[in-house]
Image 1 (cartoon, helix red, strand yellow):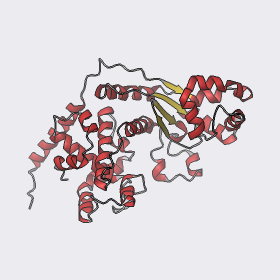
Image 2 (cartoon, rainbow, N blue to C red):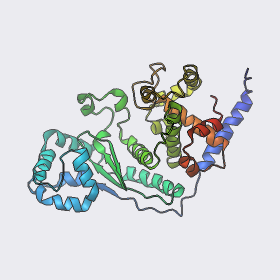
Image 3 (spheres, one colour):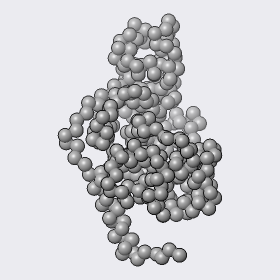
Image 4 (cartoon, rainbow, N blue to C red):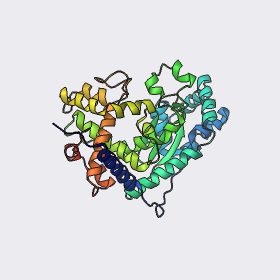
Length: 336
């Protein structure tokens, strides 16, 4: 039987852990410089007179390069921007009544991008500190007709601003977007969503043993790196939770962990089981319906925090390059 720790000792350990995390992320980036450029296709495209848009396409391609191709193919799905007839399709897109309503709303919510750009610069400066050998992307903002929120490619980070107009935006209800998805479709979610998308492509999941707990630890590593890159950001925003959902996870941490153990789910390789615990949903399968979706990712984050608290010699870079999820779990000695 495990004895309860005295309250004073519990408080002391909590304070030590808090200080450990604070000190770990307290880094000096004064000698780190980056050149992060933000290019606003959402403005440039819709400021062109539709009557001359076809003639302006070569200039758009020159200015936006590979991203304009990605935008044309993957986001607005008009096909090859070099093809005959593409100009007519693009004119139809920018003159569409509903797309113009979206464009006006984007202008209203994002009259400028300065504050978000500064957040991204701060975070990517810290990213360059931890990973000096890695590239910094060019950031592109666009209107995608509510298609992809984020587009990531080599040195490209695209952000669909029409997916961040505010959870109370009337467009989202009309489109039938679920409430649990809308709660993260706010302007303040832009920097953290962009960072998360970039990190996920830079540090891919090692699926040699694809089970639930490995996925949890991997996602926990992603969340921990967000801690390092955005240390002042509230935990709820890092998870895409509300403050109430974050409190729920804190209050039910032990119960969630016990449920996974008692039902022998930690080492489940069933795709549907993993999906229900890792991906966005109204609530996390098996937990009470007032739980947030991805609550098991939050548990994975706590596992990684416990591991890093026990391993002060392990750097953030070491952690992200370590794909031995079972070792991280074991050496974390995680026990909520």
